[in-house]
Length: 200
Picture 1 (tube, rainbow, N blue to C red):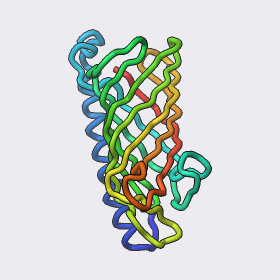
Picture 2 (tube, helix red, strand yellow):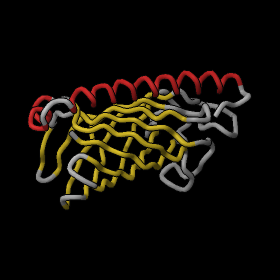
Picture 3 (spheres, rainbow, N blue to C red):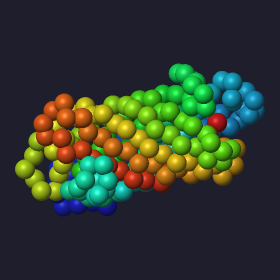
C-alpha cells in the first residue's frame, strides 16, 4: 500500500525492493539446491532453514507493554547450518533476518544465536539472543512512533514450531527488541507473527 506521506512512501518502496531482492536470492538458491540429491544437500548446504511470513507490528500488551506504531511486517530469515554448540537436547546455531514494516514505521535487520529444543518429533521450541539494527526513532515526541533509545538493540525471540513434514514447518514467532535500559528512552517493541519454514 502506498501512502501520501512522501517520506514514508519512499522508505516503504526502498524497503520493499530490499525485501524482494532477498527473496529472489533465497529462491534462486533453493532452486539450485533442489537439483541435488537430498543426501548431498544435507552435507553441503550452508543454510539450515529459510523462513518467510508476516508479523503484527508493535503489538500491545506484551513485553513492551504499549503500542504506538502500525502495520504488518514482512519477515524473512536464514538459519545457518553451523552448530555452535549442543547441550543436552538444545542445539545452538546462528541466524539472520529482516522485518520490513509495510506502513513506513520501524523496520529492522538482525542476527544472533537461536537455541532450539525438540521435545517431540513434530514440535520445536526456540529462544535466543541477538542484535538488531533499525531505521526507527531513538527519541521522538511523535505519538505514532516508538522512542527506542539507540540504533542497535538487543533482540530476544521466542518461537513454537510445528513440523508438517520433513522439510516444511509452521512457526508462531514472537520477538522483542530493546536497549535493555543501556540508553534512554527505552520503549521497546514486540512483534508476533506466523512463518513458513523450509528446512534443508
